[in-house]
Length: 481
Image 1 (spheres, rainbow, N blue to C red):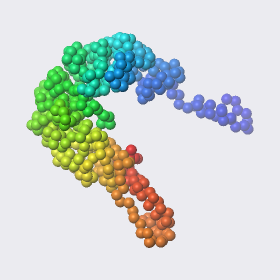
Image 2 (image 1 turned 180 degrees about the horizontal axis):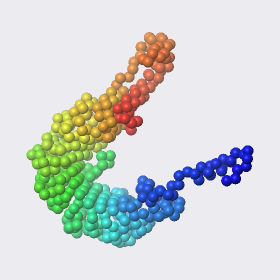
Image 3 (image 1 turned 180 degrees about the vertical axis):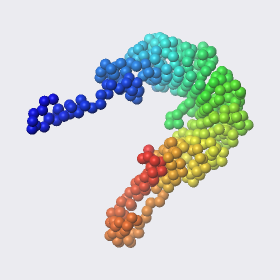
Image 4 (image 1 turned 90 degrees about the horizontal axis):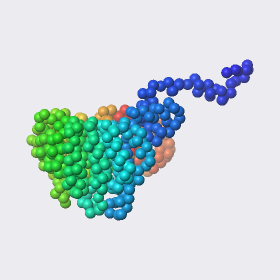
């Protein structure tokens, strides 16, 4: 750049020089750009790929296409004639699968509401995809959980079910298999070629499955109240077939003592995690809590010494019913109460007595009826507790005490702001007519202004004080959600 004496360079030239002399990101290795792109959602990856040829090539890198989620929209019910209309398949899915399908390793296939009729083109695409890709993880969330209410409505076509089952039939490297929901209609379950559990058993290349998750549900979601689920008797051959399971997730109506004893047999791989979705309904015998003796749990733990058990409660479950499964030797490490479940003093006392040594996570999303001191006592007695989520009423002092119990050892500490109450709001003498007064730090303040803020906003001030103390205890800036 030529610069005349006595003249400053123009701002435009200065900015241009700053850009020229800055870091040259184009020289970053390919692996770094692939890592950066992996944090972006698909549509943003595409936008970035349009900036230059180098980033377009990164967009086509195989490792960016190892994980794929395909989300299709079904029909809102299975009684109207609209159920026979074909599902609309976005053209982008067809293009992406045709181009990158062979790279898929972790596939999630979701159909919301109810399964409609797939277009013929999509069926052929799925069948071809199941042969091309080498899936290591497959998650199926096909429609809602089926209940007896849905049986009289339209049911999925055989060709649609067959197309979905092709992913299991052609799987050769599958290690993790999750069924979040599936059309559980009697006509398909009675047919061995359409029964998804029979199809799993028929593929000998799935013997080395590590993770099997059946109808598991996240704590913040909701589930069908009385869905059609496989019985424990039909589950047992499945468990026997997979001798190398490390993680098993199922619902309580699918569990019984025979499955626990099967998981305790010598020669099997050691189970690391057992997740039980407690699904209780007093009006239906199929949804009773299974009776599992303490001796069976003891045998189970001896065979799987590092196993952890997580329980999630869907609905209100009496303590006595829950106690039929959760015995003294049960390796319970986490318990979660969903929004419409029940957490009372009896359950907290039971946890405090039997599982204070093993408990690592306590999460309550319902409106509990237990007392604050019982909850604090549970946290004090549980040395391994490092996850705490509580949507019940808690005073500021209790929140501070809970935070200080574990301090920086808390991996999760979640309490909604609306659930925190102020129990120690300050009171003022109305006859105090002082204008100024000394504070705790010796500094004088205007009494009238301080009284106004304390009386109008006592909650916010006390909560801010609590927030500061909790942040100090946790070692980071903490805020109630």
